[in-house]
Amino acid sequence: MPAASGQAGPATPAPFPQVRAVARKAAHSPTLSIHERVASRRARGLDTVHFGFGQSPFPVPESVQEALRAHSGDNHYLPTQGLPALRERAARYLRQRFRHDAHADRVLIGPGSKELLYHLLLVLEGDLILPAPSWVSYAPQASLAGKRLVWVRTDPDRGWRLDAEGLEDACARSRSRQKILILNSPCNPTGSVLSTDELRDIATVARRHNVIVVADEIYAEIVFGRRRCASIARFCPERCVVTNGLSKGFSAGGYRLGVMLLPPDMADLMPHLVSIASETYSCVAAPVQHAACVAFAMGDEVQRAVRDAAAVHSMTGEFLWRAFTQAGLRCARPQGAFYLFPDFSPWRTHLFRRGIRADESLCADLLERTGVAVLPGRAFGVSAAELAVRVATVDYDGAVVLAGLRQHRPGTPAARRAFVHHHAPRLTDGVARMREYIARICQR
Image (cartoon, rainbow, N blue to C red; front, side, top):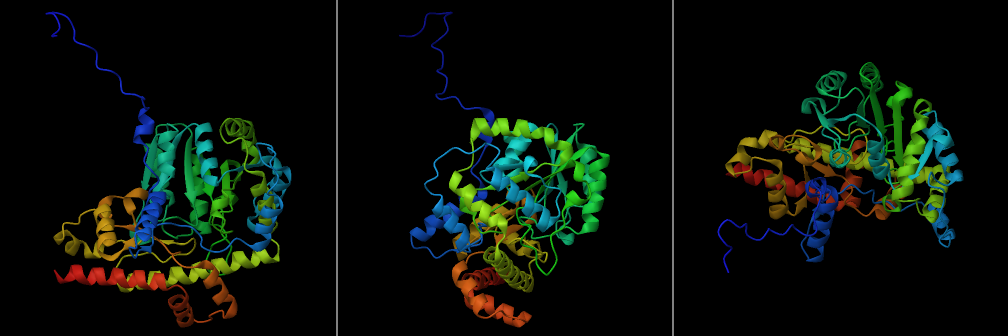
């Protein structure tokens, strides 16, 4: 029956359940999403080369696995800050391997450094400054934590590297007195490693503009050549928080164990971080923490595994970089981690003729036509018009490759290329498909 004149109609019911705006804006992590999509394609029998997901494919060192098995019955809650013995081991590891001013009292153990980074953003005041490109989860975490984000444009012709001038400009655009910079070196997605001179200059700007630097050093064990990874903590120790973990250098991503080290001048943050941890994840699983004690002790077997994995990452990165540049892509030579960030801008005109003007449509077309999965540069903070993609160099059987390396370690560049071609055929196949794709678009 219609409502009487002058009377309001029935109220529109509120949606159920109601969702906060910050949650509605959140999207599934692009890296995890592409990983699930590739798994689905492969389950349906679709031949797919997986350049989209960065998971170190090598087996966890046997001594670390044995510690996990030995403590599988440990069902007790551990201290929220972390097992004391593990914090001691982690502090010693950070001192000995990277010369950090590390003490167990300033070490926090979490379920992956990803979670620790988010908790730090919740605790600290200030805008978050990020170089573009940066790892896919930094910006979404800033949004969830209510942070204003300030991007720093970087130069693709300089390998997309953050420099002091870019940070200076970002600080001028920031509205907050205190600022936060997340610096990832070796870098996901570019494979770049900042030099000591670059780090020193960035640290000078950080000190001048009250920037807290978060050194995400999860790839610190994967630096190519014979040098050690330099840390910005060396140049601004009073304002640098360091994160690390088991995922990359120790090939134990599924263990989900991260480490955060606070500098002495910021030790007062620890109670706040522990309080938040106590109300969210409580503590990291006890068996995993005991296994991490063995990993961070860096015994002979673990050292060998870490060293050999880095050697393979170096060979595969060099192999793909050479192939991409020979195919006419613009791509910085990787210096660490296991990623490259090539862009198709040299083929822009040909791609435009196909109606491809943005990186997401490029990635979709590559996957549909060639079965090669890559991630769009836009997910990492660069303009979609750059036509950049992130390539992970790890689509191979790590156990097989490691066995091959230990049987015969190639000594020359040609031998290393032959090693990758023989032991990691998926990488060779993926490159061939991308080259064929470029050849096809050039024919139109």
